[in-house]
Amino acid sequence: MESRVAVPEEGEKLDQEVKDQVKERGQWTNKMEFVLSVAGEIIGLGNVWRFPYLCYKNGGGAFFIPYFIFFFTCGIPVFFLEVALGQYTSQGSVTAWQKICPLLQGIGVASVVIEAYLNVYYIVILAWALFYLFSSFTSELPWMSCAHSWNTERCVDFLNRSAANTATSPGNVTSPVMEFWERRVLGITAGIHELGALRWELALCLLLAWVICYFCIWKGVKSTGKVVYFTATFPYLMLLVLLIRGVMLPGAYEGIIYYVKPDLLRLKDPQVWMDAGTQIFFSFAICQGCLTALGSYNKYHNNCYRDCIALCFLNSATSFVAGFVVFSILGFMSQEQGVPISEVAESGPGLAFIAFPKAVTMMPLSQLWSCLFFIMLIFLGLDSQAAPEERAAGAPDPCRLGHLLPDRAFPSHRGRDVYLPAV
Image 1 (cartoon, rainbow, N blue to C red):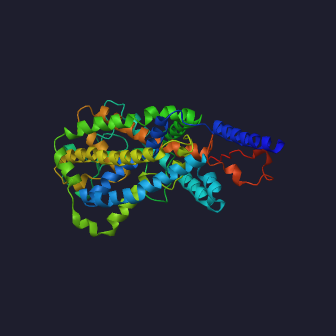
Image 2: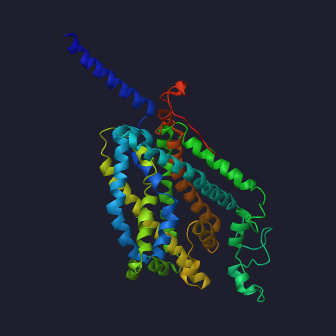
Image 3: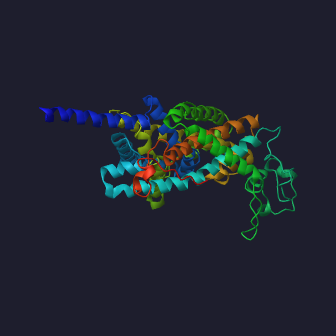
């Protein structure tokens, strides 16, 4: 009789331990917090500046064919796998794999290393965006003219090119926006033999970016879940405003046609398929461990399959709409300068910090559009930066590197997280 009574008591004890663990780690208050947090993590700068350029580079609308093949065969299944793994185990990537199969916990450790590298370089982009945002609060945008201390004799304002010195070779001419980027922001030197000085303005912007990220995650999901209500939705408002403004510009139609017009012959190139697969894995934050960490805060019976399908389609739709914004503006630049779109199209940071700043100088209320664009970039990057930081910090989560250490080596840290920040 006594043995029969002991069984439910043991079961109740285990249930209580599980409840205590969930209470310690925390959970999303509601489904919307989870959806917005994951949306903020996967929808970032790559959607705005990488996807449109890949479409332009790889045959326009033809690029959608390999993209959606990888979308359905790789993107959605692996995305769902990672979220479901975290929700099922209520653990981050390291301890989730350790619970499933201890031999595979190296997968989680590898994802931690990847995130460590991503955190170091990704936040620098936020610092650049903050620098441009602060520079936009002037009576005249500092990259509009060549009348600044950082400009050289080779600087020529393309809007007043007729007034330029005709003796200057076109190959030796630079634009004010290019010199602002290279000489004012980055401070690029003549070569590796010249180290240059510390960029105090950028260093302070970098510090500010770290501080903002800290306050976004300092209370774990309790603070992150509230912050994403604004940071994950505001970029969509900005994207909509920029889309409406972009399609109203002269030359926007030609730019959009250039974006979606398919060149099916490009599908013969293996690089096109490689770029499509790379974009899916990069944009969906696959194999980075963040999806597992964010999913671990879900309730056990949450319908994560439906959430994952919706989030994957939202991510790709955002990339598609961002392409209309980018190429409507590139079409406008092409018409204003009288050059082909291929000459004004930039990739990566060049699109955000060279092409678009050049475009806003040709618009009325240029300071306003510059501020809106860089605010959008900051929020897009902030969400993508905060989720990996929360995961790496382990407060309260999820990697729990302390579980990988011998108890006899660190007896006072048994069952606790070990946070090794590197700034």
